[in-house]
Length: 133
Image (tube, rainbow, N blue to C red; front, side, top):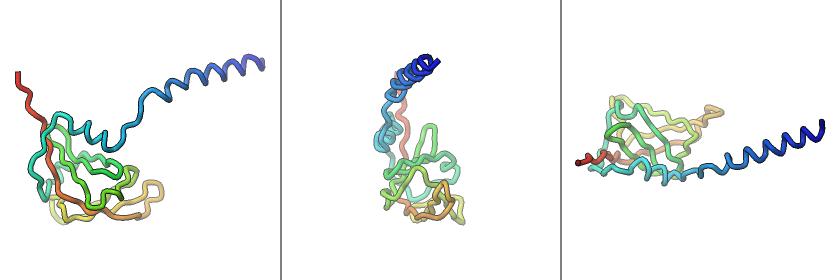
């Protein structure tokens, strides 16, 4: 029985080894490059509609990406080094837009306590390049 248990543990270790090495994790900069692949940058804008902020990705210490589909908006905050992809971003504004002068409060995901703020920069639209036949 003991031999069977040792064999079972050894087999499990052999099977999980390749799974751990399967795919290297991309850096935030590499993730941003992948999101921008096939897109061209437009003129930076001061504000975007809240409609465009429904989809959001925080790229650790790099940028916040808003939107989906043909146009995504990239915001590199003035203090991007404070971005943590595990934080919750909370915005409080009185208009239907998110602007480059807005301050975003950050909350620790596990404790729900305030742990800082992010000062947004300009919003750069990246649009898909139309494919020609």
